[in-house]
Image (tube, rainbow, N blue to C red; front, side, top):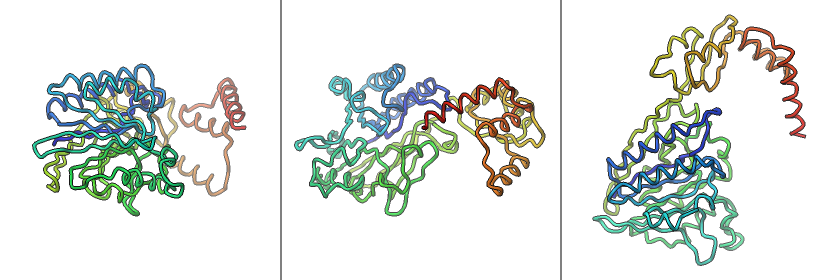
Length: 388
C-alpha cells in the first residue's frame, strides 16, 4: 500500500507580515499534481491544517480548492485528516459527513464518551487490510474523564492510555496518525525557531514513542522538519513549505511510504516540493548583497545581514530596489559587536527609546527626528500600559 504523508499545512500563515496565500496555493497544487502522478492508495494529513483557530475566508477557500483537486483524481484516493493544536475542532469538522461521501475522513477530537474510540478507517490492498487510527492533538484534560483519576498524569500517560484502550490486534497491519511532540527516551527530535512558541522542549507535553512502537507506521505532525524519531517507521513529514528563516536548510517534500505484507521491509521515499519563492539568508556588505540579486531570486523571502563597517545611508531603502520580500535587515560589524560587548560587560541597560534611536541612527545614517521620537514615545507608553 502506497501512502502519501504530509502535515502542518498552516494555511493562512504569514511570514513577517507577508501573506503566504499565493505560495500555499502553489505548493498544494504541486501536492495534488504529485498525487495524480504517483497514485498513492491513501493520503494522510497529520494536523495543523490551518495556522489559526479562526481561519480567514481565503484560508478556507485554499483548503477547499486543495480537497477538490484531490477529489477529482480518479480512481478516488482516500484522504485521512486529523486536527492539530492550531486547528479549531468545530470549524475543521464542518461538513465532515458530506466529505466522507467524497472519501475524505476527518477526526478532530479524541474519544469523549465511554462508548467512543479512535476513528478507524480500514483500507485494503493485495496483502489484505490496513487499519488506520486517527489520533488528533490531545491534551490530558481532553481524556482524563475516561480513566481512573490516577491514570492520566501528563501527555505521555494520556496517549499511552488511549492507545491501550483500543485493544489493537498487533498481528494486523496498523498505521497511526498523530499530532504530538514525541521523544525517544532521552532523545528529542530536531526543532526550529518556528515551533518554539508552542513546543516545550524537555517539558511535560512530550510523549515517548514506546506507546506507539508496535504500529507498522506512525505518521506524525507537529514539527516542521522532516525526520524519523526512535526508528524509521515513526516519522514527522515536516511542513510542505518553509515557514521561517530557521527552516532555510530544510528540504521540503512529501513522505511516501510503501507498506508490504506484515513484517516485510517498509520502503521510504521523499518527493521534493520547491517553493516558487525561497526563504533564505544573505550576508555581506551592502554592495555584495545587492550584487547577488538576480531576476530569478529577487522575489525570494530574504533575511539580510549587512557587514559594512562604515555608516550606511538608508540601507533598507537601497535593498528594496533589488529585493521585493525583505524579512529583516540586520547590521553586524566590529562596531556593533564592540558596543554589545561593552553593554554586556558594564551591565548597562538601554531604555527602549534610547535603543530605538541608536538603531535608527545605524540603519539610516542620520539621527531620529523629533516627530519620530514622539511617535515612538507614544507606542512605548501604550505597550507599558498594556502590560500593567
